[in-house]
Image (cartoon, rainbow, N blue to C red; front, side):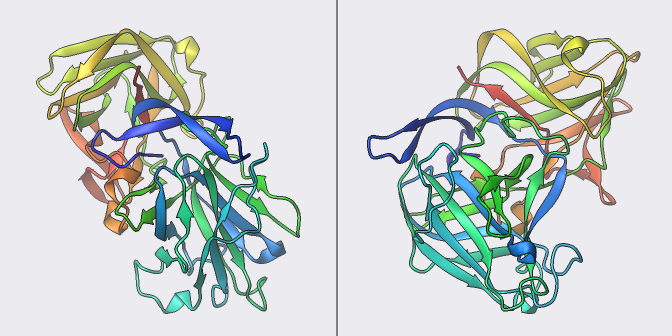
Length: 376
C-alpha cells in the first residue's frame, strides 16, 4: 500500500483500537514496492453464494468518488453468462479482532452488462459510488462485492487479486493483514481472509487524494538468474530525501551455498553500501517459491532527492538465485502512488543492463523488483 506523495512511502500497520471501538493505525515506514506476488488469482462472485471484500485502511479523510478494480469478465472460470449483477459497496469495519465488514452501506454502485464495455474498460473497471462514502484516515473499511443476479451460479464474474502460491503471514511484509486483505464469504458463512491474496484496487477521493495497490500481475514466467556474470537490479530515482537502514528482496535460491551479494550504488557505479546475505537465510526452493530476505546495513544512508541509484543483487557462479518483477498498472489507469513510480527492474546480459523481457516485448520498464528499504 502506498501513500500519495513523491517519496513513495509504504506503510507497515500496527493495529490499535480507538475509544469508540473503531480501528485506527500507527505507521512504521519503508521505501520501495513493499509488495510481493507470484501471479493473479480470482474470487468468483455468485457460485456457492460467494461474495468478496477488499479490506483496507483509509489513508485520507474525505469523500470517495470511485474505485478502480481488475476484472476479467470474458474468461472461462473467471466469469460466465452475462457477468451477473454485482453490487459494489463501501462498508465500515466491525471493530472486532476478525475485522469483518458490517452490513452498513456508506455508498454503492451496480455493475451490469459489463460485456458491452470495450477493452480496457471492462477489465479495469471504475465503480462510481452514490452516495459518495465519507472515510476517516486511519480507520479500516471494506469494498464489498456481491452478485445479486437472479441466477448467480450461471451469470457471474470475479474480482482479481495478487496471489502468493505459498501464503505467508503477513501476506505482505510492509502491511498487516488486518489493514490489507481479500475476504470471502460463501453459502452464508462468515467472512474469512483468503490466504495469499492482496487486493488490486485504487480509491479516488473527491479532494484529489487517492490510494491503493496498482500492481496488476507478476512476471513469474519470466525469471532472471543471479549467478556469475548474471545479475539483477532495481534502478530508481529518489523524489525527496529518504534515509534507509536495510534492503529486502523476494528471491529464490535454486542451488548452491554462496551468499547473495547486495550492493547499493549511485548511478555512476560508486558504492554506497555492499554486504551479503547468507545462503542459510534463504531456503533452497524453486522459482515458484521465492522468500523475502533482508540485509541490514548497520548504518543509515540518506538517498538524495533527484539522484538515481541502483540496488544490485549478485552471486558467485557456483550458486544460482532467481527473481522476477511485478507489473505496474499505469497503462490501465492506476495512478502513481499505487505503485513505485520512479524505478524499474533490470537484468545484466553480456555486460549491459536491460529492462525486463516479457510477452514478446524486450527492455520493458513497467516492472519493479519485489523489494523495499527500511526507513529508520
